[in-house]
Length: 263
Image 1: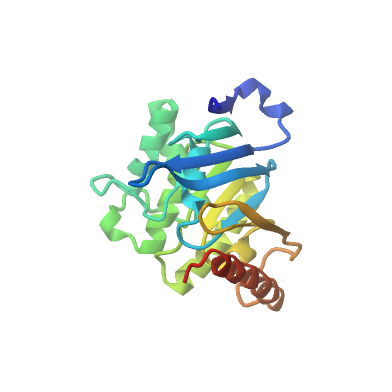
Image 2: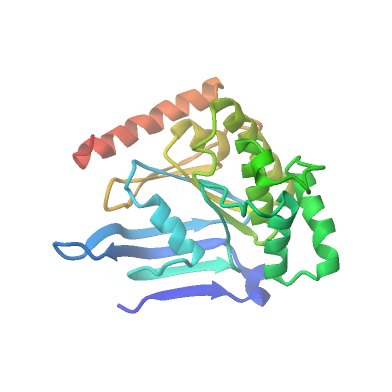
């Protein structure tokens, strides 16, 4: 079956009812005993302005699926459509240490085609958006881990995409910093109206952030179950409603792990 990776034309964006559409996507990688199926027949839509978290055990294919949506790889079967080119944010900040915070953002603006005279004001605006006003001239080594991730987020926003893909961007941070950035991300999502597809293995993080949580089964990854999160924002990780739904999702996650013999 021929693989199709379709990217929506800019002129058709207004007609889209989805920011991303994943239809019957499977992905295999070569292995010593033959092709290894990592993702199996996944179908999933992300609506414009929707925040969706992808949750699952390690190795279930969450990051692989995100890479396919980003266009970094192609599915073995099925199709993916997005409204324009998505922006991607990784667990590691991947900032260039020889550039300042502002110049790291300006690099993304330059690649987007923003005129040179407009880059610094726009980089400063984006730093203000992530609450790092005044950090334009700071080097990477002068920034804390949380500040580096804020710069990485500003750089992703500089791509002017309507779909933000996030691959466990807060996993390496301490609990307090992660909690602060959860709040900041929620604020930015609400202010900008972006669509977000967020990969995590942290159940409470998934429930705190998302409008919808999608659980993938253990390898091969399939959509095992979805939850609509009706808890009003802003949420706290320790909220009773967040804890209650997290417990329900955790039980399903444990069931998937047991079903596939993982420990």
